[in-house]
Image (cartoon, rainbow, N blue to C red; front, top):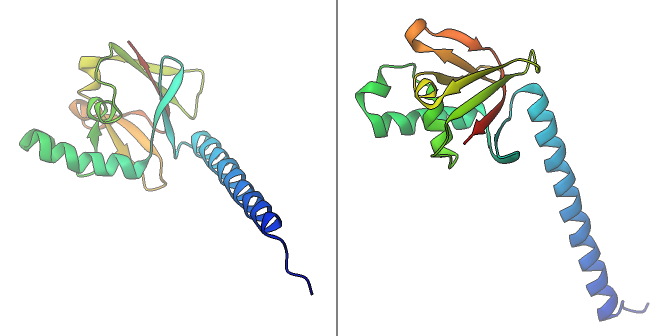
Length: 154
């Protein structure tokens, strides 16, 4: 039996790499779309481009980081909540004037907050992998049950 040529083996290897890369890209795109539709993956949009994605695990980790950075003021809050302003700063968005928060339950409605208001509200991860927006100054009043999108305006 004849052994395949070197050129054939290289071509087969390149074809396998292309199929794996293409499949990975399609899987990632489907996971992002499905996560965005269910509220388990929240896109952060600035200038009509997605600059980051936030999920409940990231909010939990940012909560711990915020406590380390801000100390006692952040430690008084719920152990998994992170301020919206801190989350946006962690996504690389430092300069903004307003942020609109979209609701999964009602895509046509949104809540618009100034930067000062965004520093007062918190994102809290839910047990189902979603993220909620709450106002701690009003006894953790739920402003948006399932956050669908964070749209940042300069």
